[in-house]
Amino acid sequence: MKNTYFYEVEKIYENIKSKIEERLEEFRKIWIEGDNKDIFCELAFCILTPQSKARNAWKAISELRDSNILFTGSEEEIVPYLNIVRFNKTKAKNLYILRKQMTNEKGKFITKDFFSTFSSPFEMREWIVKNIRGMSYKEASHFLRNVGFGQELAILDRHILKNLLALDVIKEIPKTVTPKLYKDIEEKLKVYCKEINIPMENIDLLLWYLEAKDIFK
Image (cartoon, rainbow, N blue to C red; front, side, top):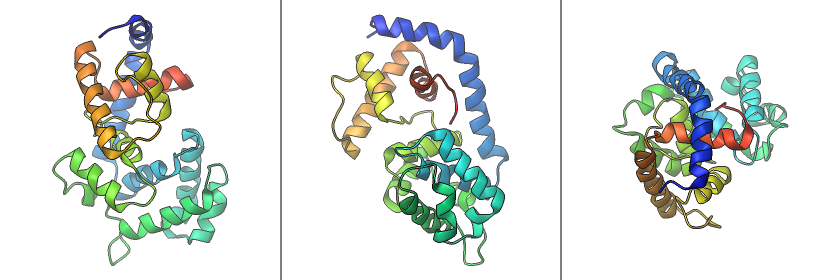
């Protein structure tokens, strides 16, 4: 159902649609043109994003990559680079564990090769949620969108939920988002996107723009 708020949002979408689509094309190119380390960086970025600014998280990952600490450093060496994100010690541990998961016995990164074996983004997401420390459905969906697999996935953070409430997609903002509830809201958003003719991956960047006035990652 299209309410008054939707028509306000639609006007903004028409103004920034080309920028959103340009950004989504950049995400797709990361998977097509990137290597195992590039995809690892995107995964690592999404481990840093909970309760932290996306630009700070990406700044930390970029500096860790440039210094090579992301690929070779200990937990203790990673920590100082994470002072601009919350829970830096926990997230440093998560990055260190992630690196072990995404390298083979010879120390070679296998991130892209590994995820290429899955049959669908939904299968990839289930594996991530069950096996990677610090990543829930939101972070896993975020990663998959950022490497070009977000066509049917929702990134349900509090900003998006607030806007979904305003658009009448949901009736209330849940205090806790269980896996079942996450998928239920995702399905409602999928139906809504078909009704308003805005792709799911586009609407996430649109609703994020409404909050941050920024189209980033």
